Image 1: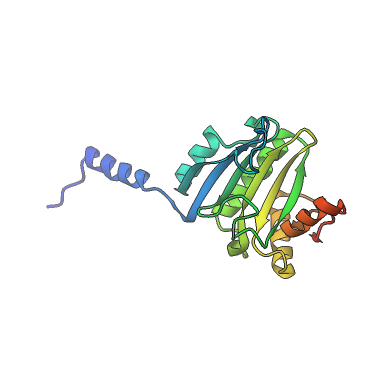
Image 2 (image 1 turned 180 degrees about the vertical axis):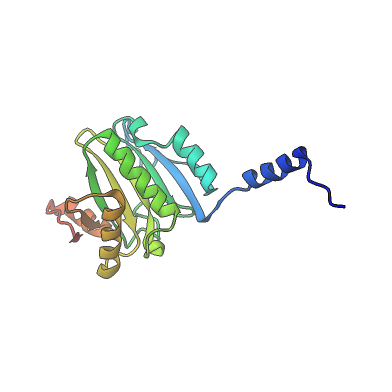
Length: 200
């Protein structure tokens, strides 16, 4: 004689399956930076704070919905999503020889949608060159908001072009986007001749 599971038993089983979190391939960290009131003589990056580290889909959505929407940012503030263990600074060894693809956002809704599409592509491992990506930054500025995708190795043109093309597809941008290396940016601050290294 077989016994049918009781309603209570079925609910417990269903409840257990709901509770199982969906693990991501790797851990990620959200960071926040507010440069609106820089301290006199403060070191660059001193306002940068790690907010949360997560490794499940459920944690990601909770954090994104509650906190990490760029449209909630004040002017001169940034949200960052980087691989756990990588700081969103040029000086971090993972970023030191890299650079970034940058896209301007025309409105807050565009900024939010490009940011979210990029986050989902990163945590969902949609880039073939995922190991070459450090993270992404959403910046709210008086002159115009932007999103920047940071990568590891600026000298590897084939990899950078692959990342740039995929990112354009992810965020659905038709206009040309430019890549600049952090070393080039450092140089351009001295000589004011800022040129993108690559574009797609």
